[in-house]
Amino acid sequence: MSDLTDLGVAAIRDGVRDGAFSAHEVAEAFNANVAKAKGLNAFIIDTPEHALAAADQADRDRAEGKLKPLSGVPLGIKDLFATKGYQTTAGSSMLGGFEPVYESTVSRHLFGAGAGMLGKLNMDEFAMGSSNETSAYGNVISPWRRSDGGNAALTPGGSSGGSAAAVAARLAPGVTGTDTGGSIRQPAAFVGITGIKPTYGRCSRYGMVAFASSLDQAGPMARDVRDCAILLQAMAGYDPKDSTSLQLDVPAWEASLSSDIRGKRIGIPKEYRIEGVPEEIDRVWEQGIAWMRDAGAEIVEVSLPHTRYALPTYYIIAPAEASSNLARYDGVKYGRREMPDKGGLADMYQATRAAGFGAEVKRRIMIGTYVLSAGFYDAYFNQAQKVRALIARDFEQVWQHCDYLLTPTAPSAAFAIGEKMADPIAMYLNDVFAVPASLAGLPAMSVPAGLNDQGLPLGLQIIGRAFDEQGVLNAGLAFEERAGFTARPESWW
Image 1 (tube, rainbow, N blue to C red):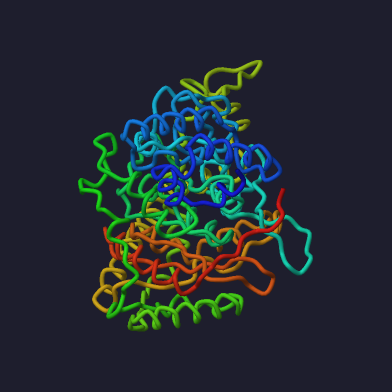
Image 2 (tube, rainbow, N blue to C red):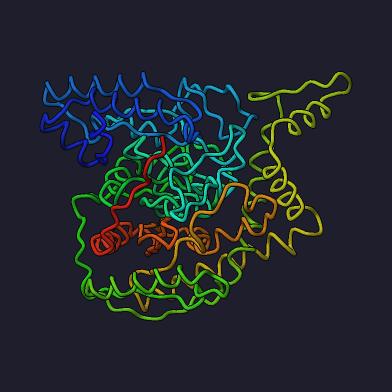
């Protein structure tokens, strides 16, 4: 049974189809791993009954010749997606006990394709964080440990930290994540898995708890590029319930996968060579460049001149949108309510929000409210929007010279829990390589590239043109074949 949890999405799908094992056996094996791995705190709630019910339906469908694209595949669902009848908290005590009466479009697509749900995955509160330390339900612990004997528990990254840890620890073959400024890609790099943020609008945001609406995008995280292609194909699609959803057909990404990138041009943006980044990041980047050259791609240096402004631009726009989106949590319609002994409605609002939001969420609400306030809107928010447009224009111009970009995913390997929480700026710098593609709405994927001297994973990022997920996946596959990354965390039980 334990061998089944070593299989990825494609292998499970194909094995159930071919009768090598039953979907029920797969669900039981992963449910057992989830139950044994409580120490990682990757799940806020477990839903073994959902996984088993979907598995039993898959076995019946196989007997009747009616298998679906994900029949027999159990998944973890990030707790940012509304799941009908199952608690959805966004990692916040503000939504503790909240059970939606509707299903998010992404999870509905996955369940409609035959997938089951192993549970709701832990995350930074309202997706605000890069280490999964802001969750009201405790931090997720990475299954990886330093090979130098260091005993400090490591962060799996964030905000999709539970998602990343679950895949790396073999608690799920694939998961959903969300990416506002790197929250799929950075944790994927930290734990040695693959994750893709598609073009903004590819996946519906309906039923996804909002952080920054012009940036939030759902995407898959899994063992490899093929598994990500399979999951993304099931997740994506036009949704009239989301005004930002793209009215485009979903391509056959898996069927069109090809590692043949001969003649393609890979851009290396000079602005991503940042002073102070550890030598190991530059070293693995150079190795990745060599692999892409070996795949037949032409390597060209390119420039994205406004990249230097991406991080401050993001940390104006995202908190501003968060300030607006989180205004709905007032203790009136749903979620937490705190009633002070004395006072009126305003006092109830204040008490509810003071008790329900964590420190990082409050910090970002305050920043966002400030930059939107009278007298500062033009100086901050309006200026940031103009710079965002310049960043997007940089990418448009760079595609005249190359087909994809290859960059580091994060400026370091995983760090210890508690190492950066006291310094918000140091924590925000985790997003330095991921934020530009988010601001431009471009597809970007992190692929594991190797281990550092302490035995921890490092990832590289492939960025592509808008709507060219296929190109990003193909380049990722070529990279994956040459990296040959098979490392996994050792004993974590």
